[in-house]
Amino acid sequence: MTITLNRLPIGQAAVVERVDTDVKISRRLRELGVFRGGTVEFVGAAPLGDPVAVQALDTRIALRQTLAARVLVRTEAPAHSELPS
Image 1 (cartoon, rainbow, N blue to C red):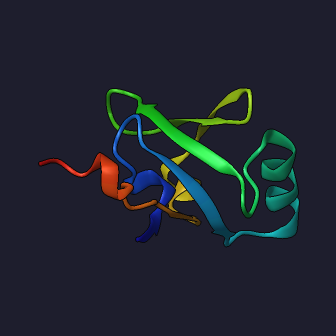
Image 2 (cartoon, rainbow, N blue to C red):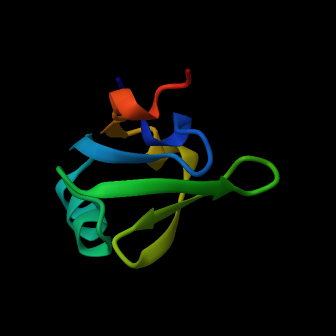
């Protein structure tokens, strides 16, 4: 399922599909570990919901909700062995 990064549940990891922003910001996000095919994890949000904390590679970064909403991620369905019985 493809959703925006700011919609991931806390603790959920996902694979980055696309970053819809200008070249300068996209380049900076890549430097921080947010790039197509990379794995990110939603760590949490500030009390009022902005900014959000994201783990990418070995870096924890804070992103504004508006920027996190421009990062499309794909969540993986649980493997058959992980499905509840």
